[in-house]
Structure formats: structure tokens, C-alpha cells
Length: 324
Image (cartoon, rainbow, N blue to C red; front, side, top):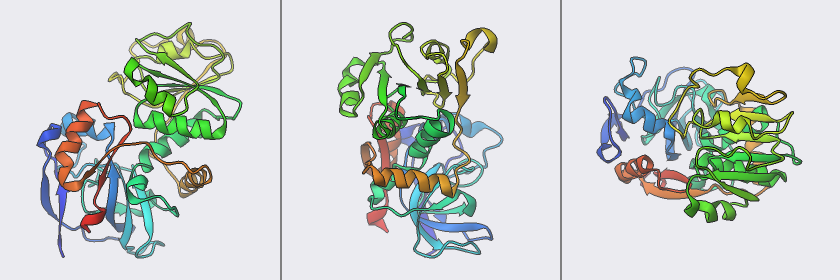
């Protein structure tokens, strides 16, 4: 077999216009491995690529999108991996600098492919790489989260918010989460959140005792989030759900309260150690990803349209397992 099904983009594409095409299965080269993909998650990052970023000169077109996947090694090339090994992959240029995971096979740089040992199903594992690694890095590398912390998750009903809530609760933290839709309160309650705040753009004065804050709405609400953290607390800006990417006219001297720390997390540099730590934690606490909807690969247009709508609570996962 030399051909595979894949999504191939050359221009801005709405979700319902996404189509499967036939592409050659990539040829292996030194330092890269060929992965048979069994599942992959959909991400806001891919929506941005598909709707606008595809026009950027740094995107190698035609491009197969997708920044994460779960699968098995088919050809290990000259690396330390072995054929049949279960792996996940994420970031490092996937779906932008080189072809990503919206395909039956992917040729990936070995330094961004990670061995995993887990009892999670392929669909569950497909929901892990980018979402859980980003939550893990934000909470521990940046926020230095401890069981005694009271953490605010601003934008709690996105897939990343659910993952962060799940990890923080497993650690023993008190968790406060926001949503801008009152009808989603029950979802946060079901996730184990201790307190829920309706977010209409400003929550200053509605909270107390917050020692750590994970900002997932982004620049749109970051200034306000900084005002809700106790002295000595940390705010980590990770998400851009608000659609605003920069802080125009930001004055760090005046707008970062005295004694409050601001940092940010970028998920482009995972390591095998960090993935091992994450998977060990998931296994120890019997965590199961909050999956909003599962689609077969042939339903990629419907799945992409669902991603664009923003109406699914939890991670959208594509399954290719039964097709291979």
C-alpha cells in the first residue's frame, strides 16, 4: 500500500468544506519515524490555521493540518523507537512546518514523538497529547501548583479547562472556574469545581483567596484576572479563547499588581520525561479525558464544522482505529 487518506489544505477552508484526499504515504528519512495514526484530537489552533493562518508565507502548502496524534510506530528509521511501539506526538511544527495528523499516516521528527504505556483506549489517548500536556505544563512548570492552592481556571468549559480542573482536583486543590454561559454551570459542577463564576468580562471583586490563576480566555480578560490574585500569587496566560492575541498598550508596571507574578505557557517543547510524568499522574489518579464527541475519519468535515461552532463541551476526537 502506497496511498493514504488525508486532509490537504492550500487556502482558507470552512469546516464543512474540509475534504479527504489521497496522498502518498510518506517515505521515511533519518531522524524521523513513520506513525500509523489511530486517533487525534481537534484543536482551536487548527481552526485558526484553517480559517486564516493558511495564508501566511511560513506555512508549507499544501499542508496536512493537525498538531497531535496517537498511534503506533510503523517504521522507526534510525531512531531508538521500535516497530509496533505505542506513541503520541505533538507540536514541534506539526501541521505547519511539516504535514500533521489529519491523515492515516504521519512522518514525524523523533524528538517530538513520545512512547507511552497506558491502558487508555485509542480514543481516550487521542484526547491526551496537546490538551493534557498544555494543562500539565501550565499548572506545574508555570504555576508551581500545590495541593494547598486555590486556583482560578478562567474559561473552564473548554477541553483544556476540563483537563486543568481534573488535574488540580486530583492534586487536592480548591478550584474556581468561570464560564460566560450560565447553562454550562452544571458541566463545571460535574467536573468537580468548588465554585463557579459567571464571566461577563469582569470578575474583579467576585473572588477571594485565589493563589494561582490559569488564564484561558487570554488577552481579552488577562488584565482583570491579574486583579483577582492574592499577593504572592501567579497568573499563567495559556489560552486565546477570547480571540484577542496581544495586550495593546500593556503597562506591566501599572497593570501587574505589586507582588503578583505573570507568566505564560507555550507547548512546543515537550520532553519524554514530562510526558512520562503526565501519564504516570493520569494512571495514578485513574483520570479519563472529558471527550465531547467522537467522529470517524470520514466525518472530518462534520467534526471540523463542530469545532468551528464551539458548541461541544470537551475534546473532539477523530478515530481511525477500526479503519486500519
